[in-house]
Length: 193
Image (cartoon, rainbow, N blue to C red):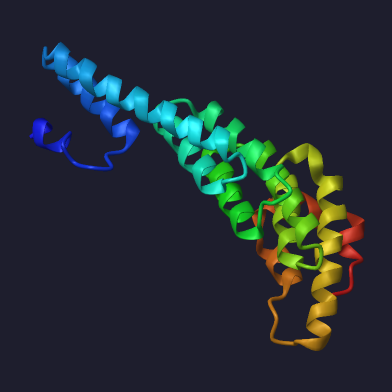
């Protein structure tokens, strides 16, 4: 079964390393080393491609994901942290990076991605809301969260003035447990939706 699996084209790098480990456990050291060699070569090729095309988000995400699969989450986080700082990054890729950081529980980098997103889309209440939510989830950042959330609420209020059917950020905040401390602030209590 393993022998047929390793012949599949496009086998992920992390899968090859796993197969090598299985071969090693089965006492088939030669096959294990072959798979390790193929995987190391593929990893080096991916790294070289990204070095040649540092602005290629798809390559950065692929390499970052591979590092995570290999148990090297911090290397993956570092790669994506570099990717979000590239001026050419678009909003779709920023959102993908934010999901990547969120999945790994990297709040600092998630916040960084959302800051860049709000710079690229300063009129988006949702971007500011998401950033405020990340800040609010860090209990010592309630004041920061309120400043960011106030921006989201103001933008949302403007939007709803011309589009009554638009999502109501204030109502979302009222139900979102991440904003419990923010809702206790006098500034929030005095906000007029």
